[in-house]
Image 1 (cartoon, helix red, strand yellow):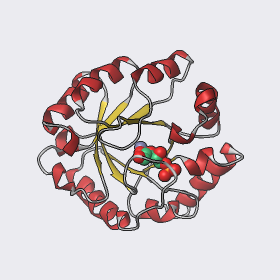
Image 2: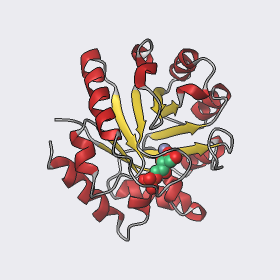
Image 3: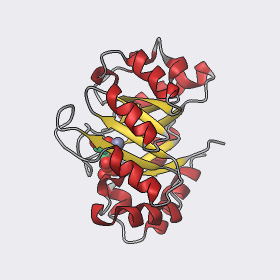
Length: 223
Ligand code: DX5
Ligand code: ZN
């Protein structure tokens, strides 16, 4: 039985009430908080940084915070996010000059490390560094915005990364990000994901508990 996690992306939350929004989704059954960091350089959008992560911790959020860095360069922000209370820190390997060094740095500062692959990015980046990876994140949209359509070729990519992870026998999580909703989450789960980011599908719903419960029951239907 897989330990499946739902990770609401706060990109679609009401930023004016962020602390309350995060509390609400956690109370509604979310397992970790997906925190999208965009720099208007690596991606064409600008969002939030370490100060906001620290503010959530100060607000009393104790759940794991899953920081998704869509920034270049990467390394300078790793330490800042570790100090700000991040649990996972994931980055896009092509955005770092030295991905192996960045992976080590993330673990050295006490966080779990993640590598993120865009729809067109090859997962062969994993070949020589898999022992330094705690999470693989497959983008099922091009990064930069919430509310985009799920790219279906991600399903095959999930199947192949699931095989790589299983063969490695390492405790690596497999996360999917972009366009995940009740209607497609079962397919994503059966392709091999165990960690499901959903932004607009959760924060756009009237009732967070009911949408998260529906997602969990869809996942359970293929386990
Ligand atoms: C996109 C972000 C995603 C996004 C997901 O660049 O990394 O986390 O917020 O949003 P939805 O679930 O609306 O596609
Ligand atoms: Zn994300």
